[in-house]
Image (tube, rainbow, N blue to C red):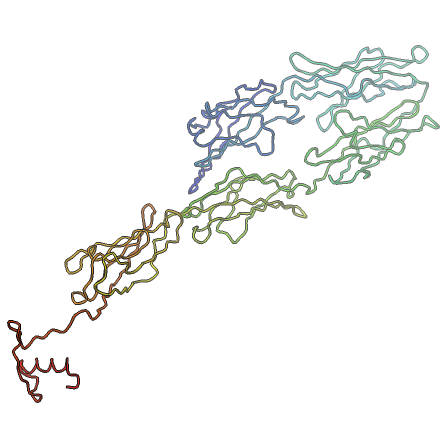
Length: 592
């Protein structure tokens, strides 16, 4: 009992710990009894059991053991009856897994159930009856019904006794299958005239402490002389049938010969089995010896039947033989798929090879019929691989992108290798959560905006717009005016930007005659952590309206009067005087 071994398998986001812990307990322990300290034996901290949401996974089996996470121990949850769980199979064990999450881990636990002597040997029939001729020779054997003891090992049936032993003695014959045939041997000749009826008691005793026993009454009716017993043509008959054979299928025919004549040679056949349900599944024609299937066989439940057949004549003489019937497996079970653990959500930046789900398959068929392979659809960035026997992992195969696909419906199909193959499928949804991997993007690489001079301060000039392919907070865009200066003056004294809408407002009134244009940068920043951003250049062009009248530069006005000056039309425009003249003439006399 204790930790046998650990093997660690490391994956990018999952640690699979494959280990085996074995315990041994007797059956019928009270509910709540201590089984084992898995926290100590697995080297796990009790806090890890809590944080990892430790749980027991038993598949389709009943849950007999419970995990108390507060102490890290296994306790009895339900009554454990070894005979109900394993019947005659020994050793008997409960196999289950302990699963932990964050990171995922699982451990295999084996609890061997040892037998206690809680079943006495019993006989299926309340009495046995024989008709034996007084001429039966000493040494003649009569097959007796075997007792049933559901316990195993030393607690199983160990011996028989017969009382009284005036005429008969017991003989046990070892069988190939490990059982024993109980025979009552005629030790002294019978005399019908002295005593025509005998009563004996057959007692079966087990090897437990204390010993338990069961008895059955044997009634012998002594008949008149019949000096030839039936004899089977074979002592052992062998046959086989498919587990899906319909009722009424002929399995085999046994035959016995009696050298007597008349009624003493008329043979009837009977199946004597009482240990199992063979006598209910197979029926024999009492007159012909033909054995037919009368019930349903299941390879996964029982793979072979041993029939003990008796042939008896009218004079009470008998012979026996054994019929061995092998059940052939057919592919009659579809694979069962169990999700042991799965992630409901993964982030889009998980690395390829990350395990998102672990499944377990079970197919009770044998050989190729029970071998299972699983696959998933090809058009998704996931793959499936075998981690250990009947366990499969679904892992990411390439980089995920939430902006391309925000969720995947993953269908797992598991098929056996039988002919024809049987399969089953399950589908589960995996959500892809967002990471801030996209910066805001402006609609244009740069913007030109126009405003007429002499504008009103706070006038809306233009709106910049950026979008972010991420989701939720990661896609929330804020607009920021980048610090810069225009002619030595901070840009913030010229314009402002609305953080939420991206609207650009004028802070002052512009004058075309002072500045015809200016440019600045606006930054778009998302709400991720850390935030991502991008910049764009905005150029503001100031438009000139006719807001300035002409000014007369010459002649100069003095004291409110103008000094008149005559200019010849033929004067050229080379002198200052003539330049002024030309300007005035062109301004006010277009035909000049």
